[in-house]
Amino acid sequence: MNTRPRTRSTTPLRWWDIEQVAALEQVLFPTDSPWTAAMFWAELAAGRYYVVMRDGSGRVDGYAGLAVGAQDEADVQTIGVRPDRQGTGLGRALLRDLLDAAGRRRIYLEVRTDNAAAIALYRSEGFATIGLRRQYYRPSGADAYTMCRLADPPPVDAGKRRQ
Image (cartoon, rainbow, N blue to C red):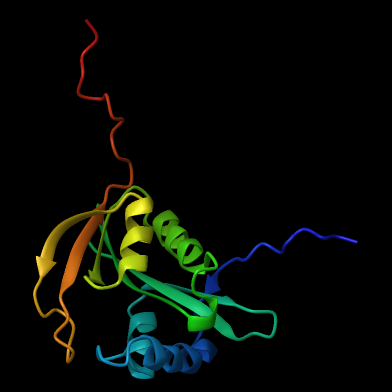
C-alpha cells in the first residue's frame, strides 16, 4: 500500500470551473469587488494563463492567474485559496506554477498591505516591495503594495570583481 501523500498539481482553468472560481472570489474578496464569472470568461478569451487546484471530488480548492505583457514582464492577476485550505501550501504551489509559466520574465503583483500571510509568501519566493498604491482596492479603499520579482536574480556577489 502506498502511504506517500499525493502530490497536488494544477490544471488549466476551464469554462466548467468558472462558476466555482467566481463563487470562491465572493468568499475571499467580498469587500474588494470580487471578480465575476464574466470577468473570468474575458480572461480566458484574452488567452491569459489561469490554473486551478481541485480536491479529490473535483471541488476547486484554489486558483491563480497570470498576464504576460511585454516580452520581459508578467503580472500576477489573482491567487485565491479556499479558506479551509489556506496554510496548507496550496497558495505556494499556485504561485510557483505562475512563476514557472512566467519563465525569465520580471513578475509584478499587488497585495493588500494588511495581508501579512500573502506578503510573507511573496517575500519567501523572492518578491520585494517596490511601491505603495493608496486606496487601490475598491470599494474597501484598502492600500496595496506593488511587489516585483526578478525571474533570474543575479548572484549576491555578481557585482564583485575577483582581486
